[in-house]
Image 1 (cartoon, one colour):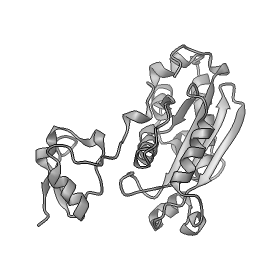
Image 2: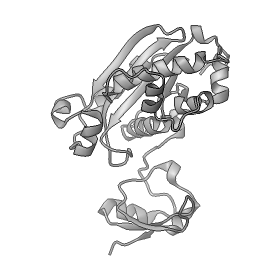
Image 3: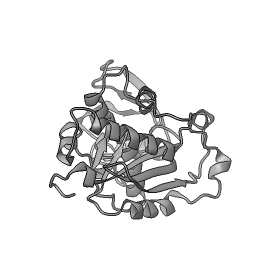
Image 4: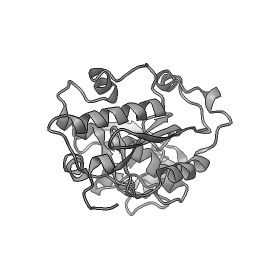
Length: 261
């Protein structure tokens, strides 16, 4: 990334969005990637849209949200074929990427890149949800809520490219809203740059102290976890772990107790 501040009208951006089979990359898959490349003056340069065969069944409750059916993804390219094309679309690393609640999208993409043994893109990424919280006063900051408030939503679709285009329009409104933001450093002061590498990396070997959890993952046995924070500290819950990501590891490994025999 070029750290030098640039005028927004001369800068290039990519708004992107994913549709998935679930909420977490461990156990869920990407089913669509959509993105739009545009200039800070609003000029659209090109689009990217690709359905992805997740090689698993898309739950009905998820189909109801984004409308992507199992029949639609059957025979589409798999994620290992789509990611290189997406990286080609991203192009130069000076391009600023953006997503709404960016951690969700970065989590899935970083996990997919790491699972395939591929390097993550090094583009800076901003979270437009953070930007919106500083520039608008709304009851919530879901992309749909912002889009309706600004009267940008023209359909009920929740497809990846539709949401990426909506995100572009929202972003342009947010930077033009008075007092306007005219340079890239003004964006990063409000929404600090994120990177793919800050997010999930799949682990191939158990870290010290997590051997029992690794066994539970391999054998698909339920484990009991104990929360150390949040609204219900010390609460216990039984889950069946599907995998382990490096950023999830902390000193609380003694709180995980396997129920495997």
